[in-house]
Each structure stands twice: as C-alpha cells, then as structure tokens.
Image 1 (cartoon, rainbow, N blue to C red):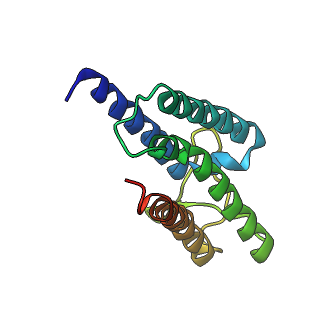
Image 2: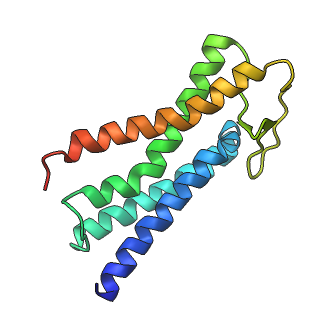
Length: 148
C-alpha cells in the first residue's frame, strides 16, 4: 500500500467520522444556523470527492469515491427530513434519547420532557439511526452492485 493510497483511505475515514458526528448530534440540525454550517462542510467534502475522481485519485470503483464523500450531505438531508416528518405527523418536537436520557447536540441543548414522551422519543431515536443507514445501504447496493 502506497502513501497516496493511505491518504486516500484516511480522507474517506475522516469523512465517515464526520457522518457519525452528524448522526449522533442530530439535535444540532434543528437550528438553521447549524444546518447551514453542516451543509457547507458537506458540500466542501463533496467537492473534494469530485476533485479526487477528476484527478483519478481513486482506489475504489468508478464514482464510489463521490458516493462516500457525499454521504454526510445525504445524511443531513435524511435526518432533517425524518425530523420534519415526526413534527408533521405527531405534532410534537422530537428529541433524541441516549442511555435513557435526553441527548444534547454539540451546540444545542435538549429541552424535551422525557418522562411524559418516553416512547415517542425512543421511537424517534431508533428511526434517526436506522433510516439513514438503511437508505444509504440501499443506495450503495443499487448504484454499485454491478459497477466493478
């Protein structure tokens, strides 16, 4: 494995760590200011993926690098959509739960009432973790099943 290849995979791993931060701190996505910050960072990541593909610095299948660098952007959109769907259908503000406590974001504090809406918050927490993973796995399989 050459040094270029190590840097390539290191960049992809760092982008996926950012995706995990977005997923676990999805309370920050309720603030428009923080959504815009996350979107700017993820668009910058996508542009890096396009440049890597453009300069043929890709050790994966064609366009797979762009897919992996666009995961944070898609994750932000999916998470924001799930939050909007929960607000629309249940008419309550959803909050994430972690270890039977309300989970805070990096910048946003969680202000929900856990005792009153325990099932709703738990259901939202499961949905906020499972749906993006299922959707991204489905997209990966559908795009790259026969690509290589």
